[in-house]
Image (cartoon, rainbow, N blue to C red; front, side, top):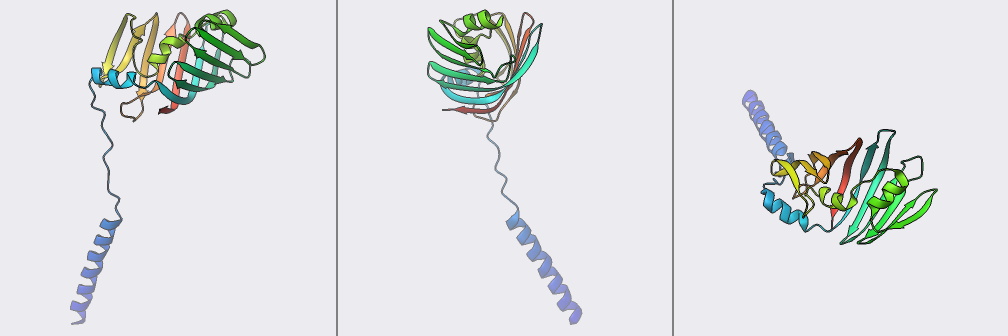
Length: 201
C-alpha cells in the first residue's frame, strides 16, 4: 500500500509540474511577415512624408574620414538634419524647405542657399544629394530620374541613380520594412548610414 501511495504521489507531482510548466511557457506570437510586392512597397513607402530618424553617419573622402551622430526630422516638405561631431567641429544642422536652405556649421556660422548640395559643396568641398536621399532613405528611387536597381525579397538591394551607387545592407522589422543600414558611394566619397531608430509619423 505504501508503495502504491508513493507511486501515486510521484505521478501526481510529475503531472502537476507538467501542467505548471505549460502554464508558465509564454505563448509564442509569430512576428509579422513583410510579403509586399515591389509595387505595393513603393506605394506604402511613398506615403511616409513625416518621420524622425536617429543613427550614425560615416563619411570617407579621399583626404579624410569622419563619423557622427545623425538625427533627421521630416514634416512634409520641411526638414531638419542634425549632424554632431564631424569635420573637426561640433557638427552642423541643415534646415530646409523647397528653394530655401540654411546650414548652421558650428564655429563657422550660418549659410543660406537654394539647395543643401550647393552650400555643402561650397563650404565642405563635397556634397550629399539630400533631395535624393529623402527618397533613398525610405528604400525608394527618387522619382522622375533614371535609375537601375536590383531587389531582394521585393526590397531594394542595390540602386544606381544620379551618379551614386547605393547598397542596402539591412532592413528593420517595420511593416513595410525600412532601411537600417545603407552605403552610398560616388567619385571617391563613401557614406554609410546606420539608422538605429526609424519612426514614421
